[in-house]
Length: 284
View 1 (cartoon, rainbow, N blue to C red):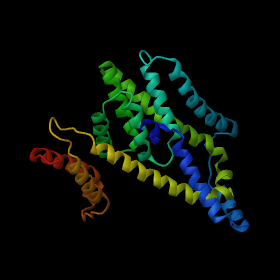
View 2: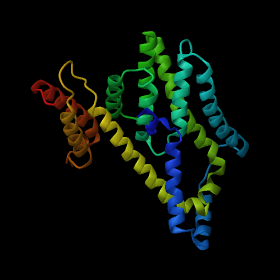
View 3: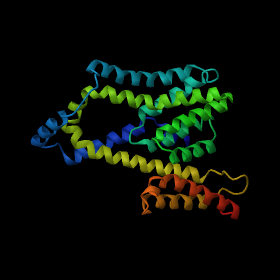
View 4: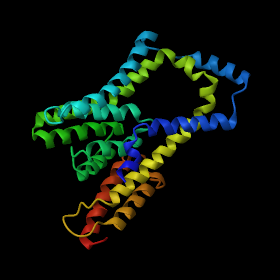
């Protein structure tokens, strides 16, 4: 049910990661005093703030969460029609603020923001995801594709597509960049904190768990999407192609180092070819 869909709970991603850290902290107890002292000395070495002072850093962090709060207020009192770019920016800003744990974790929440609202079609979302995975650069560049697709659907113009790409890219990247620079003046002291050092394994483990949850959610969603012109949804074929792609990327060892550099894009193209063949022979 929609009300029980975890993607609707924007707090769940940071909450689960923090819960993982608290679990390890309680389970393993605090660090020894000697270990904490050594960690503090090591943390103080090599930390640069690139000219960002404590007040500026605190201001950047506060601005991130002020815009986050404003996104709910503005989208609640404004109409979508006539304020499309503002709605796109706020949606991606919210996602960029609450997503902790890695690029792939962002996918289910992005799907909810852009597909369930009707800004783009589901088939376009997954096609863009495949394209983003086949291209170099971080997965967050997927935001530019989604913005371009939303702009084209809303206004049917090249300028609107470019504007949408810029707005959504800035919305998704902005919070992370500002939080990084905002935390720099405090990072040496923060990462030497014995509580944080002890909780770090739990934070990392929870982040990996969120990646796995994202994999399951997106895999289940793709199984239910029919991109064929006609005929039944190829659930079994989609599952088999996904498993083959996972094996080809993570376990298949290619002796040619040059081919290895483009292994992931080749696997995506090969998956598309196999999908075409599956459609021709009528696999379900």
